Amino acid sequence: VGSPGYMAPELMMRPASEKTDSFALGVVILELLTGLEAWDENREAIALNDLAVESGQFQARFLDATAKWPAEDWQFLGEQASKLSFFDPGSRLTAAAMERGEGYQAQLERADEQLRRMDSLGGITPSRLGASM
Image (cartoon, rainbow, N blue to C red; front, top):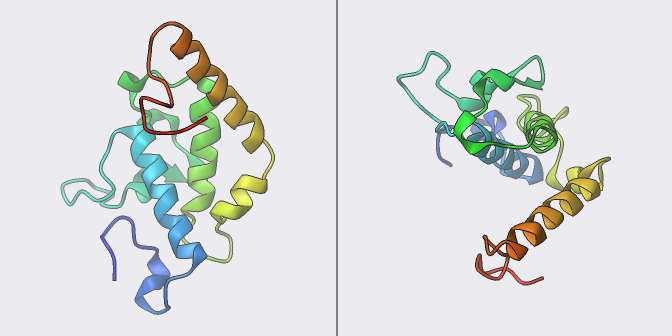
């Protein structure tokens, strides 16, 4: 049905849905933030969302220090990842709801500004990443 670590718990009993896809997106965001794999049988908490999300909150102690995330970025992304990867699908945020949510547009604008700043310094640009502006 899916890959361990990315599979929403309800996939064992129900067909895939927007909520199951949102769960996987939340796990991918957690991977980006932590640098850890979604599934590691050598960890006490095998599933990454069980390790990095506690009581519905992203645990900053798992933030990948080498990534040098600006605080406002990792805090926003950690909050969204936590909501996307809730165990209970009834409480889980969908990607569409995340896009409509408070702070999402501001986060995109901050990211765009950072890319423009990097571009002016000769760094990574959306065009070099294959995206169009």
